[in-house]
Image (cartoon, rainbow, N blue to C red; front, top):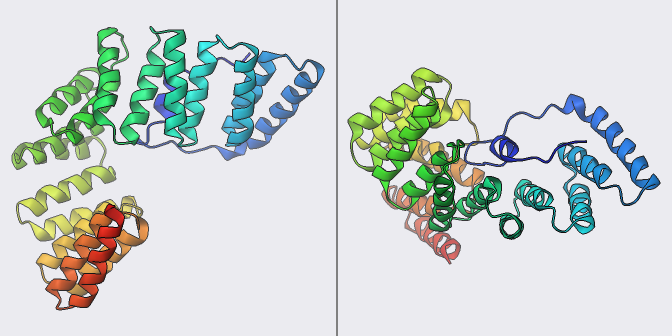
Length: 318
């Protein structure tokens, strides 16, 4: 029988903070065959929990989320006290980016078994994604109180503390990650960004450079280093780093926008507008991009276009 997907599954597939791995679609035919096998088992015995659970697993791998949802809910219907199934339901809702329902499931799991790590961590991830950083921290602090060997949650704690303005606290958490994983390029990069926010550009560069030493094709580190170079007025160096970040991640709207800022300072107005337009194309719901472009238009002597973007900014901020 397929086992329940616990904390490892959440780490590998649920954290948009860290990104998802590549999907091996060559296995899809075997997954579909497995679905047919479990469907036959269910037809023979409609109360076969193991068959529903295994079919859920393969539906999930096939990204057939409505079908997976129906199967895991059937498992819970057959055994409402199965806390692992309820936790798996929360994990599935995370796959579907339905964070409120995921939180509801994780909360129910905690009510069934309060000493399980997974639902606290899953609920924290959901609240992080929803911008509820203090609520996420509350759950992560509960994990700390459990004294578990699972220490990776400190990475999420650091992210939450950065969002809440506790940059020094974030550095402490990222250093805990480095104690366990000395070659964590993400931890070094995040420490560098925290120092950047503390306006310590020397330590910011030192740590971001370390991240790039560990992983030379790390797009986020180039983007963060570009921010530092922009802050110290190394405009051409910043543009080079943003360009490298975009080469590695063509969907990085932040680097397009920031490269536009550097070009604007250099009075490369066509280049600046081109970059901010690309940033808006990639993320049209970001109000700050329209506000930034309005500044570009003001600088270029286009007040009507600036007013139009300011209006769009106000609409999106509501």
